[in-house]
Amino acid sequence: MLRTHFAKRLFSSTIARRDTLAFVETANGAVSPAAWSALSAAKEFGKPVTAILAGPDAAENAAEVSKKDGVLKVLVASDGRYSHLLAEELAPLFKNVIEGNGYTHFVAPASAVGKSVVPRLGALLDVQPVSDIVKVLGEDTFVRPIYAGNALATVKTSDKLVLASVRASAFPAVGDASSAAPIEEVSGVDSGNRTTFVSEQLVKSERPELGSAARVVAGGRGLKNKETFDALMEPLAGKLNAAIGASRAAVDAGYCDNSLQVGQTGKIVAPELYVAVGISGAIQHLAGMKDAKTIVAINKDPEAAIFNVADIGLVADLNEALPELTEKL
Image (cartoon, rainbow, N blue to C red):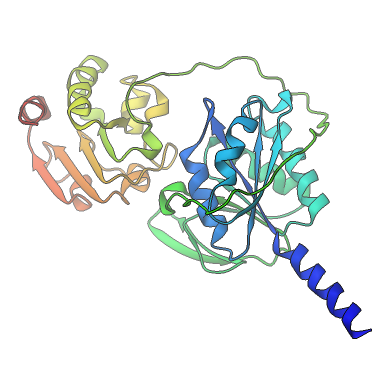
């Protein structure tokens, strides 16, 4: 009798260990760099992770994901309805997988897709999500930025199911495992969704991807116009092999595409080197780049707020300083 009781408890404990479901986002046929950080954060819950990929390219990337540290299993939803990662389609899928397997945690990168999916999933499951976490203190306790990143709040959730989005720049990419985890196909879920995908406009660039680049050069309103932005920023980025970013003021003025915006309402970056050119340093912009390892600021206004966070500051006319800097590089 004792032996049977022990066997049942051991079996139950083994099943309960697989309690974290992590969404691995893919883009342009490859795993998004933010997804590797989300897996790293999921691992910090202290228990094995089940990764889930969705879309026609999910199967192609599943093998790579299965070889990551802490991943117990990989689920693949290859149904065509997930081609464009619409939140209206993904949320019912995740709800079905979570409820069908008893997961206690769900993690997604705080990307455009993640920020759309997690709140919708929270509504379907009647759970309050914890957004944009930068540190894991425990299974139910996290650190997240508030007030545009000027303060950090430690939050604890009382929900039995924890939904969290992860700020990619706060976590390193997950490492490799010694062996591959099993891969399992899951069926699509009828969402009853009335939203349909119409079209997309992709901005292609030979530059490194802004969200994961080791070096970023960003321009602001001080560049005056699109012609000056292109003429000064492109050569500098080329010499540094850097991604190009911009402040919201530059994006709103039409100097560059809005996909290059860095800040509270844009991309959050934490590169090794961040060069801010003609950027005043509004609090919303600082929220997106102040975690960079080395910040270089070039601005003709010595009172510009950007100098308060810069490691190296140059008070100069950018029209003269940038060509000289580019030439010497």
